[in-house]
Length: 263
Image (tube, rainbow, N blue to C red):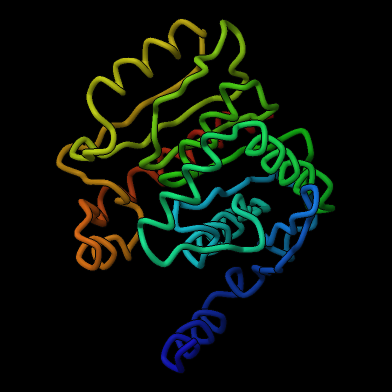
């Protein structure tokens, strides 16, 4: 961490006591012989149990961006676990590796389910978490993962996918989707085609799912990640951060959680 970044974080801590109360801990858990390296964030000033949120990373792997979203959720009063779907904290430095890592897992859904279920078990057993109120969010690859888990009847109250894939080889059966769903999509995202949206809606309608799809005009892939432009330029990919869509989709997620966790 550079000195300027450290100074900004320290200054923010002095100026905002609530942010200073957010704790971030590295956690390890096992799936078979593989060590999964996650990151748990919560506000230790809150003394009551609260909803738990799983955060599933982009195709780059469990990195600082996923952790930053976990801390943001902690600042909102949730306990958040940035999960490790690849194992051993593995990250990709190039799109070819990212595609290899994410593709291998998407083609092995039993393994993906096992790893997601392990993270779900871990967050449920946290003393800060109300085990009856659990949600999941995901970005890019992670968005596709959380939607897939919702289709497969995982016991989740709410699921939010940000610029995630919408296609599946296993459409949900009627009544199978338990979670309220938010899909935040960039209308100019070349990875999510209009026919994908049409099929997704038809499948969700047939399943009787409670879902909402926000399609932000002129917005490209990875629009929530401030580093998207850097990645796009470096690897010639159609990625672009969009502050307006980032803010709007985060607000939509907050509304989703307010509705799903209301008592």
